[in-house]
Image (cartoon, rainbow, N blue to C red):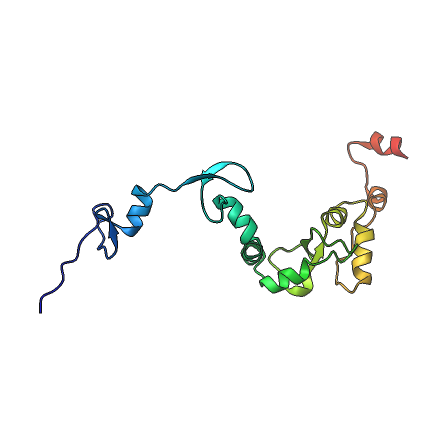
Length: 175
């Protein structure tokens, strides 16, 4: 029985099964084939056509955004995509449902258990991390059944306990 001669691609030196113009199919697409330039329907830039008249970036953001979000949840938070969708459906404080972020209740970003995560809109999330409003947001979360850490004591408590050392006049002028 005579063996079939295996042809080798001139670009990548791999055995080629399917070839065009003397090179394998992959090398042809990389080196010889020139993709058609189009004006993207979404961003109006002249780019290579990816599919349906969109450039690669617009195609991904239009057709794959849900997959990208769940993949990012898995990558950044190490949680399942279904849990991520459930947590980010609505802000647990105010009920806003357009943009919702994940907040770690114990501030430990490695603790990704479902009872440590809460979905907050950007405003409530910012308020939670702001000294003046954190107690208000923490009390709302506690009312909703979340296990939250107690906030810091008021600054006045610490100012009264501070004993002046070098800067004695500073404390006298504030009183």
